[in-house]
Image (cartoon, rainbow, N blue to C red; front, side, top):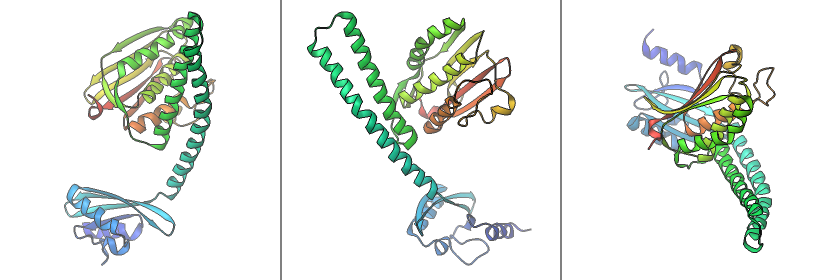
Length: 307
């Protein structure tokens, strides 16, 4: 079968996958891409693909939203993918509405609490111990506000970020877990290099907390190794423990919501949040584990994000 005949067959059998030539003509037909989809965005998207190799656009038709991706696969041959994203856009709007409501409901009482604490510091003659308590409460109010802002960015995919000293963040999380390490008699080994990355600080901190928390929870004896270093493909952050390990049949699903081992007392959402944070930043994550020997979770931050 000739190559052109194969492309014609694919075009005839599929509606959302098409192959077109350099003139925009759909293989096996006398139509051009913009004849079948008569939108100005189609012409521009195809021109982008011709000049840059890739084109992307969305169109609305009959109350539905379609996403188009055009990519050059060979000289004079372009692959066109069309996807109905109506449901995804509606879910996004629902998430946005819910988060807006929740963040507003949280922000209002936090503002009152913060105002009262500021008043106590400014207008009450507090003893040193009481002042320390109020200042600590104010600090935690600020942390809650940061968490709410970062959740909006995570689930609504809002762009942003700042250059963050990852080593400082990791060290801060470890300090807060020292007591838990001591209570379980676990050794903590740190191999931390300086690394500056543009990211959402509060989200990276949450990622570290979730991985450390999992390691502590499922390790009854031995040690936990936390590594932050520059690798060939960017910054590598990993947490390795000598704990119970994860059964092989669960490993491919462990980053999904509510997936957990039968003996786990958690809700099965810790690693799913880690995966969402990784996805938000366009990083990569991997997991290796062996029952009764331990688990290692590794996050790779590409060089393009480092400073």
